[in-house]
Length: 166
Image (tube, rainbow, N blue to C red; front, side, top):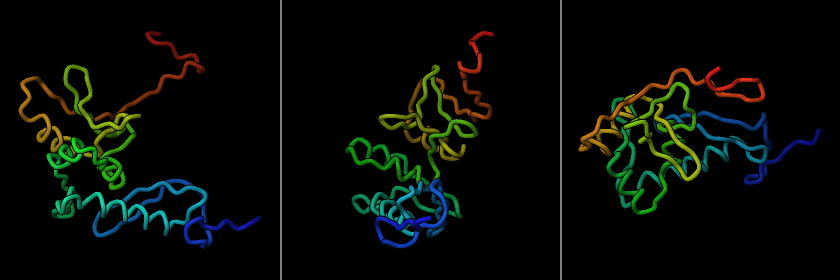
């Protein structure tokens, strides 16, 4: 079997592609490693992006307080208005997730108020983050806003014979 080499550093690649988790400066990261990258290069790239995204205009987007990640949601929304994409950074430090099950959503009149990308809806990994975002972004709202923990998601698979209403 031919040993695979990292396309970045030319070092040996051990293990299989997939998610890797690692700490850095008190933050817990998750990143996807492809079959062409070593863990060290993936970590270095994710940390580099995090440091750049966490210091736009000299103002941090996230910080640690008593080992808890605190997001400046007003600053996040201002960066979004300026088309500065920081959502991936919040996904890298596990504030936001693509996964619905086990995470938190903000709902108003049946519509999700969670952040999203152009291709996917995102969810908060903790109630703390959902409350912070809802308060900062929708605090002046007159309508009822609810924060839900999505704990039981059952996908519908037509190929298995599942039918709505059956």
